[in-house]
Length: 532
Figure 1 (cartoon, rainbow, N blue to C red):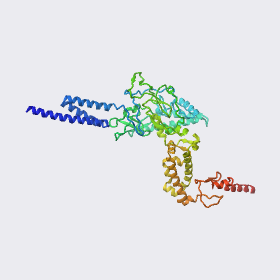
Figure 2 (figure 1 turned 90 degrees about the vertical axis):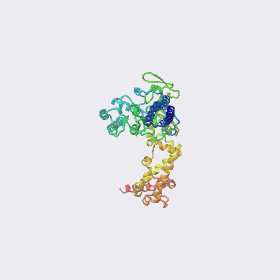
Figure 3 (figure 1 turned 60 degrees about the vertical axis):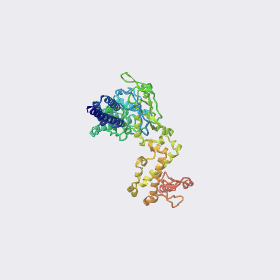
Figure 4 (figure 1 turned 90 degrees about the horizontal axis):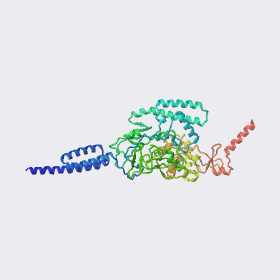
């Protein structure tokens, strides 16, 4: 009787242990896909129960639980191939990074970006020295205009005002001082608004507006911290994302963020570096990362500030990585081999091949991609002869600006909001000279030409066919006297620069390029002068 009872208890324990081990294996599989704290607590409870039933099986379950703990605390170091815009950062040693490294005192790449005017850059550097400011939109210097308090900013503003009054008008120094005054006032307003932003639960650090991030909903969405380059486990780690530039980081990494939000530079000084890969060399950077200032090397050894040597793993990358946009070198944590189109190569070579850039350059280029800041006729006027599609876009944009004068005074067009068709590219309604980088990319792919031809035909059909009011604003050629109504945006016509009369191009050239209306006005003026 006792033996049967022992046998039944043993069978029951075996069934319980096997089911528990199977459950723990399923739990471990779930944890690898991101199901975190809840599963972790359940697993610990299961482990305790199994250890109380059988010590041998308890050791097995304990090993499984320990493996799960290691998985939760140490993210995988291998990088899967990423598709689309998701990049996989370089793997770093497990030792935490030292974020207190001070920058190089003589920083050759502060806010003097290559391609800017040398005189203005020198004046700005001298003004920064006089005001006690050292400005850098990305790295964290020891004394920075962005780190000043409200009182410090107000003092700098007053000092800047007094320097402006002491300068002569229309000088480079005065223009640089006015530009600096605008930057200080913008920074003062942003500092005053920081308290209101923080009251909504958003962290305000290094001009980033860090909002708590929700865990990813799919297994495929893998996110990495822009500070430590380690994976963000959505269910386990508290993470934040900047609503302005999409900078992502762990909650524990917020205080160590050194990268300035690129939206500040986009709002204050939206300019591209228009030199092709302006490399300065590692010696100019003192062999340190251009962003975090950590010592970079091409060996499998990383030396920290304390002098302790750390041996990297075999699959780690410790070599300096060059950014094709700035020409500076970065460590693998700040340079993930992201690829972007380079504006300088597009303007000078019409080259749209994507090149590797650092994280901060990628974020800046993404924010600048839609900004119409490129005046192609000043930067490279030969592009319109070299690229036929670009010349077509220029003609269509000029015609649309002429049509705008008709549509803006037409009640029917205003009620139907025809000009809203260009809402995605608002600068097309303002001028025909400025282009954004996205415009040039769309010109190369053929998307922009089709887009403008569709809008051009829509506007032209309304002016020439639908609306009688717009038709009444047309012209009749005074030379051939044909009853056909012509418009300035038609093909084969010419607009007189003197009186804005529209004539057929053939008629105008056949009459020795003389406008009959201008001739009548000139004869009338002569007659009036004779009568007087």
